[in-house]
Image (cartoon, rainbow, N blue to C red; front, side, top):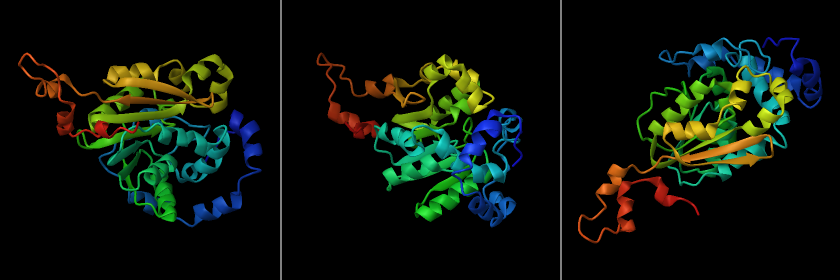
Length: 299
């Protein structure tokens, strides 16, 4: 994994973080795997890697996530750079789930940290983790196997997954949007809308946009190519543009946020439940026929 030596991370933060990381253990793990052979099990020929992803360095790492080194180092680094604690922040997404999901799609799943938590929270649900890097999926699968969790891992682009319309009850993305241009983030939300059943929920966990706008030095610290574009955008507005309703953003420990949206019940679905007689009240019990997980919303 080639790292630019002039980055803030390499000059100041990396030496501190390395005091707490078992580099020998990581090196042993990395050397024990035939990464090209393993990643070929996930790599799909129909997946086109977009230039915004392949032509940029993320976190000062040359080549971004399209290498095995990024897959090995991501977890040890992330646990120390997400205050106050990575698990607490990711748990905020789990706590924000308001549907009883039967099928869950985790977009930009990376090494599967949130994906595993989703499966643990909903053991009966079918959970799929999707990512553009087959190397990250190799690491994610190893973590799932070690945890005894049955999760499907899929190589794919969150903008155009190739999955069926209205086939998921819950779509999530953790720490993905700050690594994409705003137009791509909007495209991902529109794809999420297509994938969700009526009443399904989308949840986006990422950096706090208000905080990032107010503290410019944080943008330099994270060394992400699209961080300023993300900071000046609005996930709330993009969710509305994608068609979601009941959009709500919750601050998580000042530096992160979770945004939720619901795919609404379209008026065409409601008309069949409205009487054409003088009594136009709607029998709410009949709404169960819509078949939406929204009727299993947890109070």
